[in-house]
Image 1 (spheres, rainbow, N blue to C red):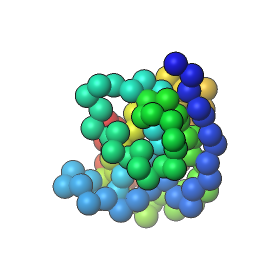
Image 2 (tube, one colour):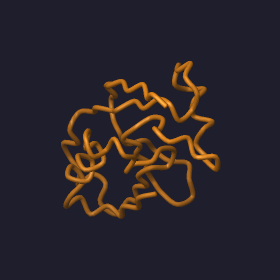
Image 3 (spheres, rainbow, N blue to C red):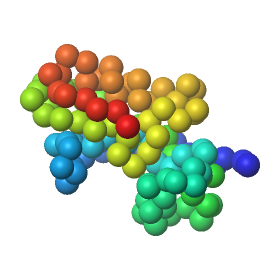
Image 4 (cartoon, rainbow, N blue to C red):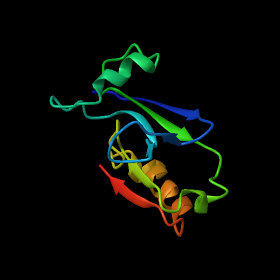
Length: 113
């Protein structure tokens, strides 16, 4: 299956979370390249503007550098709440790695799905 990949700019990669397990969520990608049958995140398609089926597109997020990572000290951050943060394309785009590097030394408790 062909995958549509787009580079998108976002204001931030971190969002306040309503999940009981974290204060913030971070999703370095939108969509995924593998369309798992058991995927809990496929509902996200309705927010993307994509006409392609879930599992056939990936938006690669680019955000401004997190300038004050210590702002997240004592906070919990859940990476990959509605995307696979280590999908096969991360080897090329490295957005999850970039996020972790920006949060290094922040004092945040980080969980990765």
